[in-house]
Image (cartoon, rainbow, N blue to C red):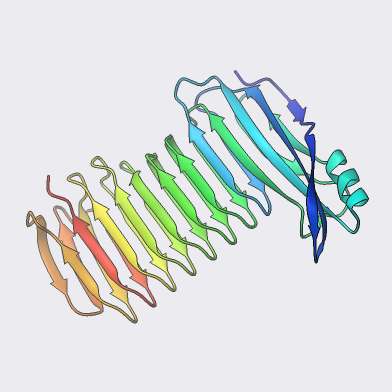
Length: 277
């Protein structure tokens, strides 16, 4: 069980970083852990940094490695600010929240890179202002948002909702009987659903190519469109029960028309692959 009202303030090992034109930087790093229970909700909030999460079904604790960076007008100020900075973990029986805490007014150069290993959870939420996000393994549901960075999700067998304002999205072996939703304003989207994923799926980008490969359990109607590019269907086993493919738009039905999926881009190609059973 998660420890009630647990608050862990992490002290960081000091490491200087060279200054740059926007000021000086100082960084610290720590590894720590806190008890956790399978099925809890985990929320990770960061800024100006990457977030990497690995699920371990045998784990009973959340293991965290954090690198925190603070900016200053001088090296002394940067050192003092990072000395006062921390990462906070708040947890109770149902949820654990992880976030960096910076002293005073947060500055543009402040940020945190977080590496987390954790038990399986019912819900994982990740939000970072500027950085890539990577999730490996897991079940249940995951929601990811970054304002500027790529997203990579691998072997997550559950509901996926991921969005970025600027970056590529890659999802490999994801989904079950829940929806997969991937959105970016600028970047390619490439998704491969697991063999057991029935759909539906929504993949949308304003600038980039879109590619979706589905397994034998997938069914429903798939609408595809692009404003500047080509729509392509790969169906080596002839699984489609109906298809209408034109240069820039198309519609494909696989099995029963029980789901509606959408693949769309304003500038790029759109590809749907129906893997052979």
